[in-house]
Image 1 (cartoon, rainbow, N blue to C red):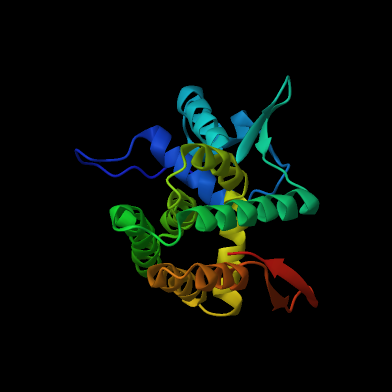
Image 2 (cartoon, rainbow, N blue to C red):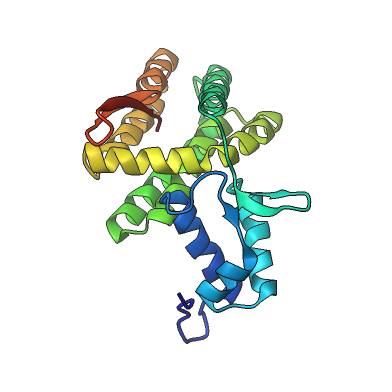
Amino acid sequence: MAVDISDGLHAPSLVEVTTRQLREEILSGELTPGQRLIEEQIRKRYAISRAPLREALRLLAQQGLVEHLPRRGARVTEWSDTDIDELFGLRAVLERHAIMLALPLIPQAAQRLEAVRDRLEEMRAADQAGDQLRKDDAHRAFHAAVVGLAGNRQLDLAMEPILLKLQRPMALNLRREAKLVGPQAGIRRHEHLLAALESNDRDAVLAALDAHGPRRFLVPEAVSLQPTYG
């Protein structure tokens, strides 16, 4: 598959297009966890040279979606079910700690809450535009902004790698929720959390965080219940 690049002064670079297309394949599940990313095959499929592909893989590694193995090349990052549960557990602990530190918000901290509103608006806009990758990024940024309410730099730094590792599970689960419950289900859950934050009531926010956490959806093809996290 040749990479589609639009003409014009603001056309995305070859690296940007390649990174986006590989991200879509990873986040959609077309490329599965642990799958090797063989450069020669991808180069032929995208009709690109080695340099932009390697830069795209480097950027994807920074996003937690690709990992480089010594003498074995690159592969899609693989996390066990236990890893994913532990990472979501850590996210929940940090979010809860951030809320305990942040609320009630003083007037000078209103700008931090505006950042949460902006990320939710980005989720809405991306959803309406059908831009799933942009929605995935806004979703991750929403949770980073929630922790950012505490105004604690070390807490922000602790949260960042956790959210990067959760990029794929969060994206897949949000997409599965849209498929099984409805396209607006994930947006509504995040709206509910934002409304709780705007109430400036610590107990209400902690309850909303608990409700926002692990969810379960019936997956007909698997005839089983599988956890979904927002």
